[in-house]
Amino acid sequence: MENNNTTLRVSFAAIDPYIETNIVSPTEKSQNGRSWVEWGDRNGYADYLLELSKQAPTLRAVINGTVDFIVGDDITISQLPDTAYTPGVMNTRGDTILSQVESIARDLETYGGFALQIIRNGLGKIVEVYYCDMHFLRSNKDNTVFYYSENWNAGKRKIVEYPAFMHIPPEKWSTLTAEEKERHYNSILYVKKEHTQTYPLPVYCAAVKECEIERCIADYHLNAINNGFTSSLIVNFNNGVPSDEVREEIEKNFNEKFSGHQNAGRIMFSWNDNKDAATTITEPKVEDFGDRYKALASHVRQQIFTAFRANPNLFGIPTENLGFSQEEYESAFKLYNRTAVRPAQRLIIETYEKIYGTPGVITITPFSLQAETEKTVQ
Image 1 (cartoon, rainbow, N blue to C red):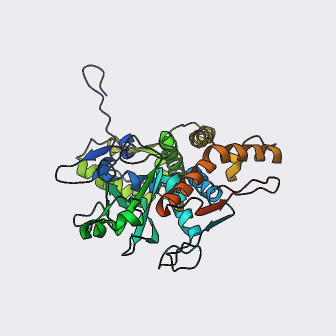
Image 2 (image 1 turned 135 degrees about the vertical axis):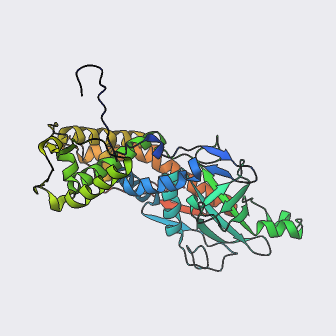
């Protein structure tokens, strides 16, 4: 910096700020020449939610816990006359009703919906039911046709088309043409909580940023351990500003040599041609972020639980109030059971009743506490 008409220029290289656009938005867009609607930016919303549910600890705990509550203590399905399998087995793959409901309950909590693949025999009877992974499915605008692919981002991808499931009674099946029967042998039943758009939204959609913050906090602490050099020292090169390529090379060499937890506390030596071109090292005075990150972590956890309308203690995450009694736990469980668990169970039960056209075809015995007894959900 000079005293008169000189401008101070400060250059920071290789600082890559986290931009909110890294968060995938649940947009819906139809591309010319394609029958399906894209689910999110670059068709990646389902993949984003899946990764978030794996990497945000609080979100994962709530989803896993809620799935356990939904599945309950037991699930039974009636032995249907047209099904050759043993009671509770849904297909030739050997999937049980218990494993199937667990899978669709997890999709329901992760994406806000789930899907089942329905197989009919030549007489139009339902003979097999398969769980269909939600994040592999795309749909046309009105959910009448579905498209399945295990890699939507690949240049060359295999896409299988399915019609939407329709309940067709035997007397109507016999009136269908051969082409119509062929179309309905293999179909998809698509269930979602959100009915105002093509794809569902998870209950925590308003807390996605908080989930992302929680994931970033973990990344920050990991990087703070493995990159102690960059968080504790500033290196100033006082011999001019080189090109971007030179700066990147210098930073690469410094990071490789001095970053990481194994290099913490090492002495760095610098050899220079003269004093005027000396490299200076500054140790910045920064506040202790420990309390700030602790408060932030507490805040984002609370926002996630608020989105689910749930109490943290139900999922093994104690609050600061350590006096949470058994009575309070039971009261919190009853409320969450009524507002979140039982509606999900009813949705699942109604789905299987729609498939088979039989009321009461599936029974879920609710998750029980030692001090609580409930009637079976019908």
